[in-house]
Length: 375
Image (cartoon, rainbow, N blue to C red; front, side, top):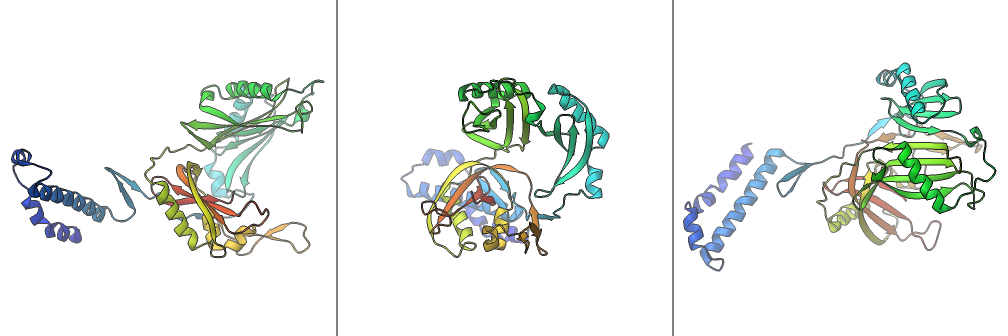
C-alpha cells in the first residue's frame, strides 16, 4: 500500500494541471492545437496510472483486458497414487452401494433393459485416479461416477440373436445414429454433431456393429469432452455400447492473439526441446481440457517420448512394472478455449513425410499453458 501512495503522490501535479472546467475544455478543444494535444496526453497518462495502481493493489497473476480482470487458472498438478483400489477416504466420499444400485436400476429401466444386478463394487481407474461404481447385470456392465452420474454401459453382441441380413449402408447408419441419439439423449440431441461413424468389419454388408461419436457444438467449435458414443447391432438396433463424457466447456473469452500464443508456446518449448530444431509453427483456436503432458515432458523429455515416464519393461518382457521413482500427476478437469500451437521439429521418427511434433494448449484468456499433446 505504501508503494501505491508514493506512486500516486508522484503524479498529483499532473492531475491538478488538467482543466477543472469541462465545458471550457470542450469549447476550446481542437485536435490540432498544442494545448489540446497536451490535455489528451495527460488524460491517457492518468488512465495508465490507474491501471498500474490497480495492478499494485491486486498483485501479480492478473491480466487486464478492457475493464475485465482474468486471474490465472493453472495450478501445479497434484500427485496421486497409481492403484486399482480406492482408499478408505475415497470410499467414504462416494454414494452408498444401495444408492448406486438404485441409480443403476433407474438407468436400466430408461434404456428398456433387464434390471437384474448380479454384482456391484467400487473401482479405481488407475491412469486418472477416478473412482467409479462398476455394476454388472445379466446381459452386460455399467459404470457410474461416485455421485451417481451415468458414465457408460456395455452389452456384448453375443447377448443378441443376430438377424440373418444385418448389413446396412453408411447412409442408413447415419440416420439410425441420429435416431438413437434422440432416444438416449432426448433433451438436447440437436446440440450435438456427428463427428465419427465406423463399422466393425471392412465392408458394410458384413458389419454387425456400427459406432457413432457425437460432440457438443458451440458455434463453430466442438467440445470432444462433452461426448456421446453409441454402438449398436444394425437392423434390430440392439444397444452394444452407450458412453457419455460430460466435462462442461467454460466458454472463456478469447483475449490472447494467435501471435501471442505462438510466442508463449515457442518460448516455453525452447527450454524443453533442446535436441532438435523447429521446422514450422502454427496455431488454431479450439476447445481442450487441462492435462499434465507438459509437466511430464518438462521433467524428462527422453522418457516422455519413449513412454517411460512411470513404467519400465520387465526383464523377461512379460509385462511392465511401475518405476520406483514414478510420480503421477493430475489436474483440474477444466475445459477451456485455447490456442493449439503446433510445433513441428526437424526430426522424423517413423515417417520421412511426417516430422515429430508437439501441441501446446495456450489458454485463450489468460495466456497460460494448460496442457499439451503429442498427437
